[in-house]
Amino acid sequence: MLDWTDRHCRYFHRLLTRHALLYTEMVTTGALIHGDVARHLRYNAEEHSLALQLGGSEPADLAHCARLGEQWGYDEINLNCGCPSERVQRGAFGACLMAEPLLVADCVKAMLDVLQIPVTVKHRIGIDRCEDYGFVRDFVGAVSQAGCRVFIVHARNAWLKGLSPKENRDIPPLRYESVYRLKTDFPDLTIVVNGGITRTEQVAGHLAHVDGVMLGRAAYHQPWWLSEWDEAFYGAESGTLTRESVEQQMVDYMAREAAAYGTPWPNVARHMLGLRHGLPGARHWRQVWSDHRFKTLPAHEVMALAHAKVS
Image (cartoon, rainbow, N blue to C red; front, side):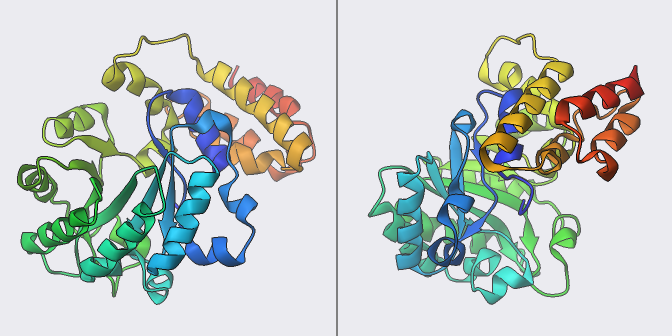
């Protein structure tokens, strides 16, 4: 979810669900060690509960960056062992780390040694075309010995050569049964399934076998779906949330961001373009919010123009 789940996106998603755990986009250890820490770690207090996802493979560097995350107030540190992009592979982290479970275990232990918050791992069920369940079982077994108790499992292999990151989200077949089997073999661990899940009934079906479900692109493109989750999965009463009230809160947020940081409102608005997905006039509403000709107007004026297109 690089360039997707930034702090503006997460603020938007928190308006829709009070209880779901939110994750940052992956931040590399190099970016934190050599770059602008505040730019990468700044978030809105409303986003909690919030996990910082790190990319890296050097235990000492990960420990340093994990400690920064805890100091900034994150609730969890997540190590990415699932990203298949070649750029990430060149940095020797992401999905290629699954071939080195003892290194991942060392990374997890190094972080846990300096933290009071949990360290979790996100990974695939395999790499390349090997579909041997024993591969992911042994990976989880080794890493859990280092103290990791939560594994977020994308139910596809990562093909490290020959497929783009986008193709890696669609072409390797989904094998949910391997994720279910992990829960059977490691009943004391928290196993969360990810990949290809687009409907509430699918979420409920998976929860009969594992402890949690991670949603990514489906939730991003159809964000109103998030508004169902608190009642469906957390036992919370449904509130009086409307798409219009969420849009108004986002416009207020855009104004605060512009005043505090000089953030152009299109940087924020791009994340809410799916808010009216499936409704009459959604395309016209979306076109107004993404029209570069309006970028110099105040956000509340753009909202008025967008509503004029759907009324």
